[in-house]
Length: 378
Image 1 (cartoon, helix red, strand yellow):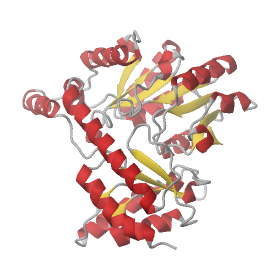
Image 2: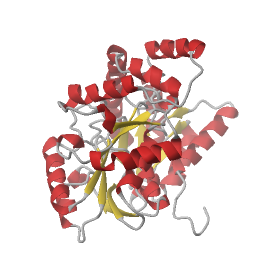
Image 3: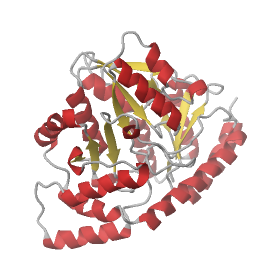
């Protein structure tokens, strides 16, 4: 990073590089550093992609059928009637976030967000010339922004990024709190950007969409998490009518279209409910294994993992340098984790994030490796 570049590196990537180096040396590594499913796309989606590869050369294309099917998802999950033309298909959620930010805000404007939060929120806002306003959120608010947080800001920011379930904590914003956040934002002229890529991965019941309470919100979603299609790079943005033209112009100029092959596969994946829900059941088992094991590791202060596939654990009683701690944990046990400094540049040195998206036997193995290591720490 140059001294003029405000965008920090993604520190979990350096942990992952070390993990790959150890694997190249013959070590057995369990990857709990990245939030990605260990499963591939649904079988029927792969079969559809294989058929398309044999018959379709591919083109710049946006699937009307896929947009309509996504609109039906909002009807089924949230009872929302959504015009499919408000859905812009993208190359994963990351370009959708760029579209949302650049369509709604201008350089110099302030965008509020929770701290801890996904590293790319802060760094995208900085890279686009906007000003991130990170609001410290601790266990008293379940590591989430609240309506009270936003009401207290003076002056009001131009926008706010929310996420439920959230990364790195897995916490969910309750329906009542989400309604209150929307009301404060409407009153104060704060535009909502809602990251909903972990929708479908909940262990506490249905999760509300920001669109239920804020029709002018920009909503980012992805096929990477629930639909288990990380490498297919397919996502979408739901844009409000007043920003739809701007968002489409940005998609066309910056990214052209989402991959045509992925669109064909994604349409089929959306109906592979039994296979996808089996993944959720596996995450639930993995979550319970982690929750049962953490006290023996001495990790008693965690965010409640209501959804997604993360445990956000306070390790301040063991270290003030979580990057070194994560490296040593990996070297000694072969378990790769994400250092909290990616998600919280202030308090993150006291936190580790574990992803339990790996296979259940690997979660059990990781626990068996880590328990004596943690118990031996002073």
